[in-house]
Image (tube, rainbow, N blue to C red; front, side, top):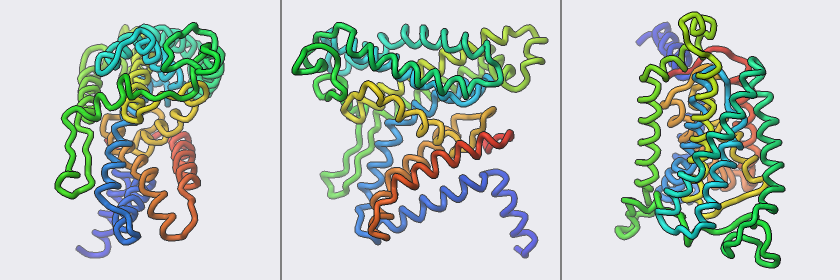
Length: 356
């Protein structure tokens, strides 16, 4: 391969994979190579990456429907998170435990997701072109409103209410008696008995795969194709007889429901539920992950979700141990902020999509 062919091959790689994603992938591979050199146990790091991927993948998947319909990145994902939190707390309040509490939590969260998503979609239909800006403030407002409601809704279960007053929910409470690890422990692969510190949360990965296949199949239906058409060319879709506003609202409801399920999956893996201002912290990682995966403000795929979540959560997992060991200073949070916000800025300043 001569110099011209190598340059052409490298240019094609950059155009297909994307320079930012290529840099991030290279940096992540560097972290994996350096982990054993700096004294970290590599199988343990893989376990952490698998766990964090399984916690966050559904929240990243929730970005896809709204991007497909032309509503942009879902900065209003806290609405879905709040629906999931309501479903989870109500399932606990009703006395369900174990796997059944997780199932009931999803069932209870669904009507809230439809209600919140419907109102959210109606609002976005009135401000076409400014969805992402408005969605950000919708998320802020909803989380702030629910900070009040968590104190006012008359929950009684002693496992979740404030111990000293019995009124209002705690900021953080454990899920050990309820749906903690109900997916992670299902069919999990644990190699610790043979001396390898590697655990694969098979159940969570299968659940994520089920949702991903479901979304993929949905976009190959008549409604899903209409949603893609609306996102690609609203004028053409309208001329073809598609109700653009209805399709956009459906995408918002679907995205909100996935956000509700996503936070329940996150909680069952994490083992704790966090209320009040905690939903603020789930928006930017989800947005950054799908952008790192190669999506843009107008195009996203399941592959973008998987690749982006692995890359982003891999960085979050590996950076604290490796970089801190190398320079003896903890800059993991700085790198996370740079990656998160840098990828958002990058995506908002371009109109072409990444590789599928």
